[in-house]
Length: 272
Ligand code: UTP
Image 1 (cartoon, rainbow, N blue to C red):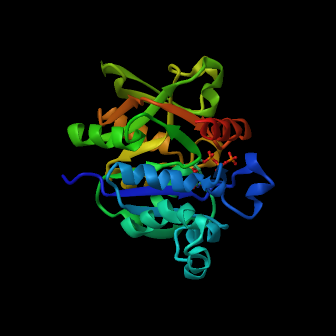
Image 2 (image 1 turned 180 degrees about the vertical axis):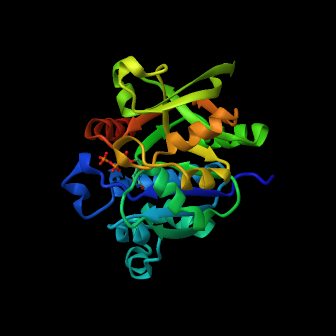
Image 3 (image 1 turned 90 degrees about the vertical axis):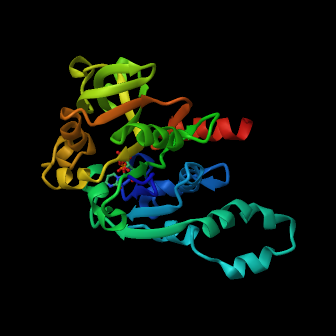
């Protein structure tokens, strides 16, 4: 089986926690200082050796497509000035990577968004990156960590972190046997359980490597919590066959889907 070549970026959520700024633009365009979350996500995928970027966009997709599209007049305008270098990293990404887009007609859940991306991914294992989970690591990044585990184990791999028990209702929570320090074979998964019902406090964050059988599973997964098609429910089907690993990633995550996490990420990047 080949290594991971494509990364899917679901970016079609309503982003209601960030209204009104998300009324006319996706939250993935929110900036950490002067760089949008989605660019950090694409950079992380590229550092993992993935250069095929597939976006699932929603109703306000233009800003996102324009960000990775050419802008010759702007480039000409700043050519030779001190500001030219501000576009260097983005221009390099645009040269290195392929970008493709498909549209989720209405937000019916993350699982549905991933299924919508099937036309861009095809029959191969792929990465999924939720750009509103902003991750900082000392190595090449969380996706690189997951991709290395996929190369070794050839099954789906999700990134997890320990969260306070009181916060389990904000996450997909996994349970399983620890195979090696930080690496679990998942036996159970529950979407957003109340603390009393959670099988632990290991929460799935927005980084996944998924094997392509997930698409067929998603097709037959009924809407779950909040009447949305949940990736957690589809992964649970794979987990029953012992085909999901969870990795307590090394690094720090900021939940930039919430205003507090977004402010903390900005302060962290500004001060470091
Ligand atoms: P969230 O659970 O954060 O939902 O989505 P949301 O709608 O974006 O935000 P809130 O809760 O209303 O503030 C997690 C990720 O899944 C994508 C989002 O864009 C985000 O990257 N998503 C979610 C979709 O692409 N489609 C969906 O139907 C749901």
